[in-house]
Length: 375
Image (cartoon, rainbow, N blue to C red; front, side, top):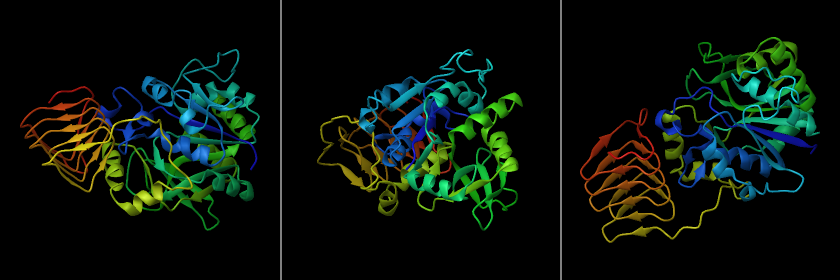
């Protein structure tokens, strides 16, 4: 495979995760008991032989930096490659002539890092959003892009829902995009959605960024992709395995609950393409004599003495005697005290639910409790 540069867009544009993103970006949100959402795209790149990765950030990025660190857990702590953290306008206007002085979205972020793109003499660039839960064979996507001769290839999946944040795509029989719409499914015409993963030639990307900046384009999906569709060929790579973009709390809740299904887990967590994350050594979880646990994902370091059903529990969670959890996600450091009853609830880190408290949400609109709260 020719040399490839990966860029992960790890800041928020359009999403509604409410309390979960008050202190962090979607990419840094904890997921699945022991992961962060950004782990999926980092792992996808490493599994596909992409060892030069830039992570574009905008704000609320301390949590993400703490998690990625030197990226050794993803085998990206290397002498001549590895991860490059790209905060807002990492390069000055003098170094990057496309920097305009404003920071309005993906195009500005990519334009601000044009010097990074020019220094890395890769043949191709994979641009990916950091809010994707999927195990995508990017090496196959790149190979398909080379064979198609298209200017740009976008990874698509079947339409799952109507959303104002989603980019919808209509493909012809040749798997070429003929229509791209944002937040509008065109009354069912667009049968696929973009996963926010794009492959293109590096020089083509630099040219398109220059063209977009000179025309004051700021929205990647509406303007960059539209110009690519009008002026050239945009191919679609259909990914038919499990994939979801985390755009709101319902997506976050559903994606975690989906992992309770073994068939879904087997699609996402493959032995040949492992999802890597930062390793933390914890003691095994303790289950009390009266603990009742049914169909759950529970990380190390927990203490379970109550009733837990259809839940995802992160590290160091404590559920006291008499507490009942059903269809809940409890992040690291959560404390559910005796006689508390929760259903369809998502708690951020270090949340304490006091004795006897009762809370009930819905699978389409789960209750979310902010970090460090006491209820």
